[in-house]
Structures are given as structure tokens and as C-alpha cells.
Length: 135
Image (tube, rainbow, N blue to C red; front, side):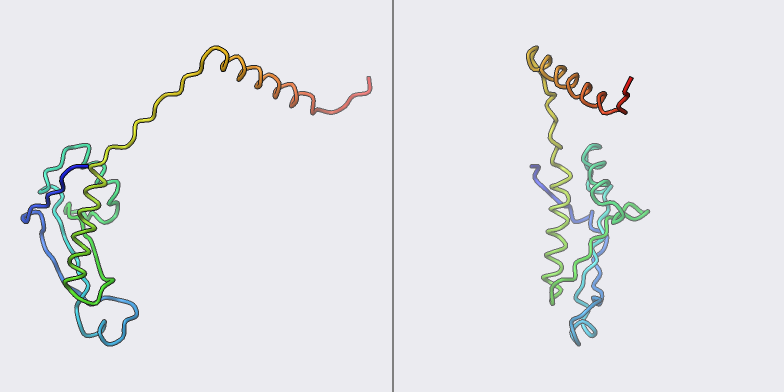
């Protein structure tokens, strides 16, 4: 896995908003949820990593090329800020991971003849399932 380094100039903004959902008066009064906007062009990613990041992020990338990460599961701003940055680092780490290359399977001569014999056997079974004629 690559060493994930998120430069400070790549983070466009970090806004705190009131979280939605249950939580009582704390949710209604205190802006603890965080929206982290990251400029993905400022990360200077290699083309393959960039394309994997766009595929992984999906609709979280807006038209300005900003990756928007929201964290609102904790009751404090600091915990939500830490979670947002951890999720950003995890997303970048996943984009840096190369997909496993599939090894092409190879059959030897005996395996090939057995496979073809099995196919021929199955073919005759299916062929004999037709209507019975009494001629």
C-alpha cells in the first residue's frame, strides 16, 4: 500500500453543520457534523490511481472536482473531523491498491479431453429428452 499523504492545500474547506436524524437537543443546537471538501486535482495522483478514486468515490465527487466526505456519527466536532480524515485516507489507500491480476487457467491435454467428453455426454443426454416417437 502506498504512503498516504494529504497536503493541506488539497483540503478546500471543512464546514460544521447540524446533523440530521435522532439525537435530541444536542443535534438541534450544536453543529457537530463535518463536511470535508478535498480538491482531487491538488492530490497529484497518477492517472490509474485517479481513475480508481473516481470510480470508488462515485457521486461524492462534485462538478468542481471536489470530493465531499460527510461525518456525523459522533457527538463532537473533533471526533467527526477525525473520522472524516480517516475515511479520506482509507479511500485514497483503496484507490492506490492495484486490483489483483487474474491468472489465466491452463488445462493439460488429459483435462481438455475429459472436459470435451463430459460436454459430449451432456449433449447426448439433452438430445435424448425429445418427444418419444413410436415409429
